[in-house]
Image (cartoon, rainbow, N blue to C red; front, side):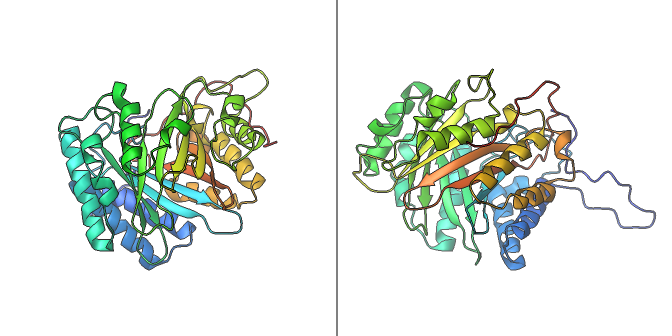
Amino acid sequence: MTAAPTGRDPRPTPAGAAPRRTPTLGSLTGGQLRRLGAVAGLSRTDVETYAQVLTDSLGPVAERPLSLPPPARTFLSDDHTPVEFSLSFRPDAPPSMRVLVEPGCGADSLAQGGRVGLETIQAMARRWDFTTDVLDELTDLFLPAAPQGPLALWCALELRPGGVPKVKVYLNPAARGEERSATTVREALHRLGHGRAFDSLPAGSGYPFLALDLGDWAQPRAKIYVRHDHLTAGQAGRLPRMDPGPGPAAIEGFFRTAAGLGPDTTGLDGRPGLSCHSFTEPGAARPSGFTLHIPVRDYVRHDGEALTRATRALRHHGMDASVLGRAVAALTERRPEDGVGLIAYLALAHQRDQPPRVTAYLSSEAYAVRPPVARTARQPLAVS
């Protein structure tokens, strides 16, 4: 990573002009949200509302100057910015914009960060009149007095027209110890009425997240993420547990495009892939949704290659790829070829009775830009 924050304005202040306001974490990420919101088709009123929600969610660290180091070593992004954006694409529809934030990123301990995160969710529940019952049912599992692991609580907001977002929380199954992650996930699903869900999950190397939909969702989901080290295309094609679900060829094709797999490569030899299965029907033996997440930033030389792969995947699924190019330009003035990690993940999602979605996860890069990789990268392949 480079050491210089990308949010600074390097231009000198003209003689006699008022000094420019020192860039802060809140001003940078709020500006990015406003510009991305415009690309996603949100109104000016909505983006101003959501920018304020982001500032409120960050708390005091929103006013932290970017000349200081990150407030914490957050697992949310490579440069420790506690904010990530994403655009989820469907055919013949505007993209859905989301923002992921770690509300307790400025806390002095993981336990305190979890308490701040919980208070933030509770404040949102009062503001937008939704219940936190499902989260309250799990706090002893995921927010213990002495939590372990890389995170306590993250909050994702799906930014809808009208100024009222859909809310998701992300929790850490390793909060009571990595060795108890599977037990924690199984118990959480049982409490939520999904007693048969755990046994339907694919085998993997760990359980990095459990996510819950809160508030105004047509079918609120409990989502379980599974890590898959050294994942191959063939293994990826066998991951979905939906019935009916996507065929192996569709998943393998997306995997090869996102990861750039060629004839001489077998699988992901760096950051692992993730599967996610969502459960909406209590007591069901099978999930209603499946998503494959590929950490594209570890398998390209620079973001120009990541953008090429994302474009191919979007076009294959009948989606407007030009929107993603505009989104990248809205986030940063740097060229995609000048860094790697701006496009962090590419994901293909299937939900029962809905068309597939392709999601691009976008880094804020408030604190650092990873330099391009000086090696021959895997060549992007067309989706078969």
